[in-house]
Image (tube, rainbow, N blue to C red; front, side, top):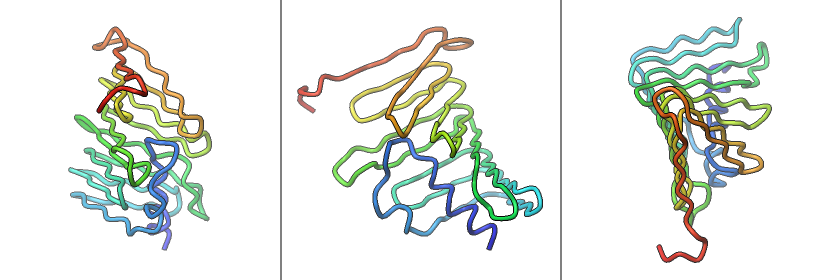
Length: 165
């Protein structure tokens, strides 16, 4: 039961302020080479070509770690690592997918903040953001990007709202 609750809230890794209304009610499917669920610590670790889907949400990485507060299983943090780790989710039926990739992605449930680190790239509709680190505040729809390391500068493409598709 605890493992099922952990997986059910992995959908909290949104890339957009809202997901499809049907996403939370969709079944969670996880494939991985290995799964270790530690009920006492509240840590669930999925490793080896991990692919998680729920409704329009897809998360892929080498490892997905879900941190939850025992004993109730309230998820506090989700960490996805990969070369690269990727996600995609449709925020509304008529909207394009929001996609992102980085070497590491962390979602903090309390602040609803998604952080992409290491060659980070986020596509939100016609707009694109690239940098070493991208923070996405899903509640306020605010993107903050910075360069550093292998990507010393931030690259942003913002399309005018009245631009033809």
